[in-house]
Length: 134
Length: 134
Length: 134
Length: 134
Image 1: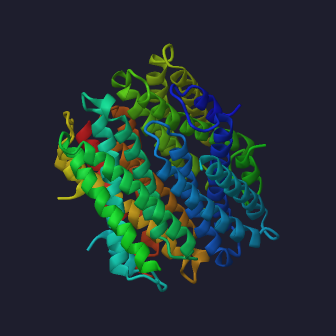
Image 2: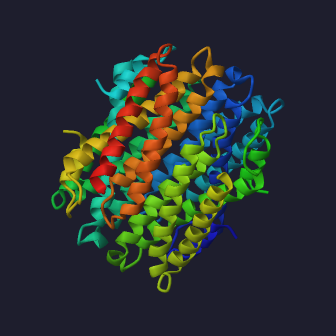
């Protein structure tokens, strides 16, 4: 059991969503943030960095958006569905863009392959959560 | 001239948006982030904190979302309009919710009054930028 | 294997530290950030929130510092030991304070118990990494 | 008067530091964060990006550390001097490294010149605040 689920289990009030599914989504989002931060840095260390600048930038955006989305989803006091939904839409959008960009370099750079997979999993997790919320 | 505009003026490639308007929007978003972080903390120090927990939570969300939005808008390399637009929608949504919540306490707490005004200005800046982008 | 280790394994240049130990430290730091964000929110939902305001605040600080520390440690391009070391000192300090504060409430609130444990593990991971770096 | 000072003036309890000096420091730290985020992106758009990868990386670290430091300094509930001091040390260290790195490219790139100045001002603000705290 991850720390995310351990903490969700100790939340003292009710939560509208299934806690196990929510924990899995938060974990996928945090994993994507970690992958994107590392992929941006790995791209900076490639000899062909000049061809990877869009990848670096999209990774930085995706890391920031995922980190913020995981935080918002980890809060349940005074829940506001509008904020969660619009942020999940933005997170899915960023993961789609970043997954596509990393996939373009996945044949040459293993870090882009691993990161693209993390982005795909995160995008799916965001879309599943959005479906659960409606 | 703010540091945001000074930096935008030195960006070496073209930017699709009017730089002065973009700088003003980023400054409004950063100001909102600062206000929300401080308002969350000020609420925690009020004797009636138990009545302000939704305000604290919404402030925390809004601060995180504004900080991330300002970062994304400050990047121009490999620009992706989909990411900017969906994040601006989320930021406007968070500012609307946070502005409404702070406004409910603005008569009693001056920090909620100042923060509500910052949220309104930020929401408007996000909507203006969205209109400029379409 | 976590995403952190998967990404470290694909970094294209050399890294001064043992990759498995570095990955374990980053994972402990990210786990602490997640625990602190969730504990701050759980405290806000407790009926006795007025007695937990210092805990909320320290959780917020610790979450922010851990998130930033995990990011810095995930970058290897143009490594600067001074930045890593001073930030690890700050992270260990924040985890010590937050672990102590959460431990004071661990008997009453299970989220504080889980969070205190995460803070202790993170503090130790930071100190181990500092020892490895010197 | 900046939003930082407006919010500090409305904080309902006492603050150990001079509020005007604290507001000025937070504003210098936030300005540095903004400059570093923009400078990292501007470097990515330079044709000679391959020679600027250490500058990008240090900018990313400095932006993250400054953002977190400004947040911690904006909280006064349950103040813990150890956290503030160790984080200010880390922030001054990051600003020193980033200012030095940007200064190396200041003759060629105006964004590095503006960013180096912001880093120097932020480093000084952190050191002044540390002196005020002791």
